[in-house]
Image 1: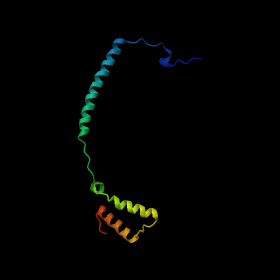
Image 2 (image 1 turned 180 degrees about the horizontal axis):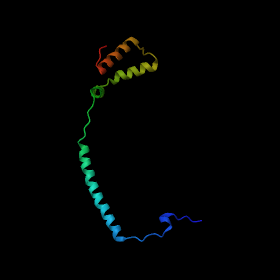
Image 3 (image 1 turned 90 degrees about the vertical axis):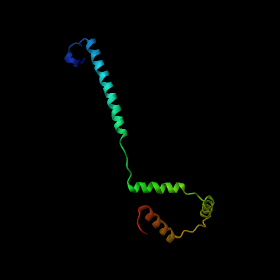
Image 4 (image 1 turned 30 degrees about the horizontal axis):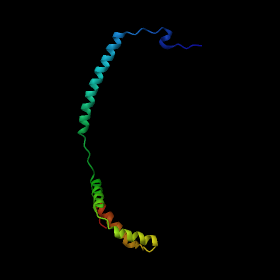
Length: 111
C-alpha cells in the first residue's frame, strides 16, 4: 500500500530557477535589513539603565565594609582553639544585644 497525498497525488511541478533565484535575493535583502535593524536595537538596548533601591545600596555598603575591615587572625585562632577545647562560653544576652544593634544599623531602626 502506498500513500501519496502530497500535491493531491499529482506529479511534482518542475523548479523555476529564475523564480528561485529571485526569492533568494529577496531573502538576502531582507536579512540585510534585519541585520541593520538588530544593530539599531542593540544601540537602543545600551541606553537602558538600572537603579538600585536604597536598601540594596545600604546592603552593598555593609558588604564593602565587611570586606575592607582587617581581620585579627591571632584572635580568630585563639577563638577557634577555645571552641575546639570546649572552653568558649557564649553570653546569650550580650549576643542578643549585638544582633539587635546590627539589625538596627542595617535596617535603620533603633534598638
